Length: 98
Image 1 (cartoon, one colour):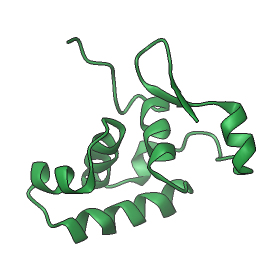
Image 2 (spheres, one colour):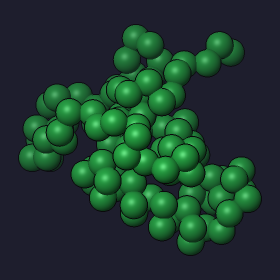
Image 3 (cartoon, helix red, strand yellow):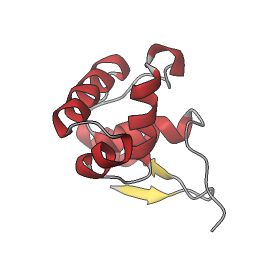
Image 4 (cartoon, rainbow, N blue to C red):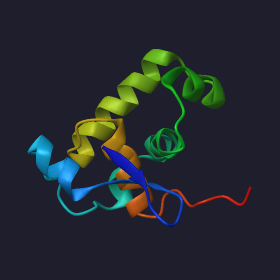
């Protein structure tokens, strides 16, 4: 279950997190991710698919998947929603003016 926070970014509710039984650690530092991993995390937080990320960054789909695996391991997250929540929580992604 996700909801949109007042700032426009997705946030995982405490109830949804508790229901899954997974309690990620406090937001980890951006410095543990490479520049490319940060780009991919930012794209995930903006709702891009793997194919869209690959096209935008001029890399293969398998490379995107490899980077996502690395991000999952480094941040100790289970899925894209948790990557997105981390990106918003750490300020990696900011709401854009439309």
